[in-house]
Image (cartoon, rainbow, N blue to C red; front, side, top):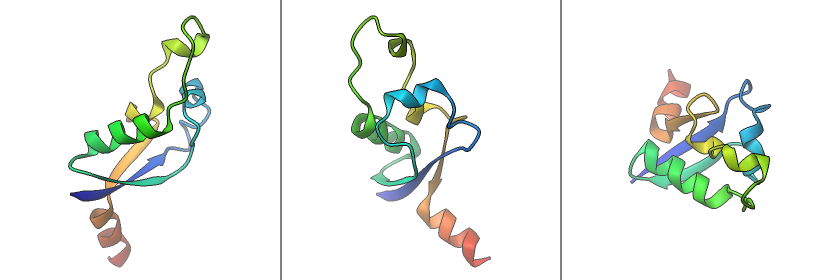
Length: 82
């Protein structure tokens, strides 16, 4: 299992999809893949939405590559050492 750093992009923070998440910030997730890390973050941070609300048409921001960058923590540490 790998530790992944999920970090919202500064350009993506104003996106209305963030209203679906109670956490808007970086987090570290242990998962087998970046996709699994996104799934776990979405499952942990998504707020319930009633059908018919304008937010129901949005997808969790944790799934969107333009809103969240995922990096294996080992890769991030290696870049800092270079």
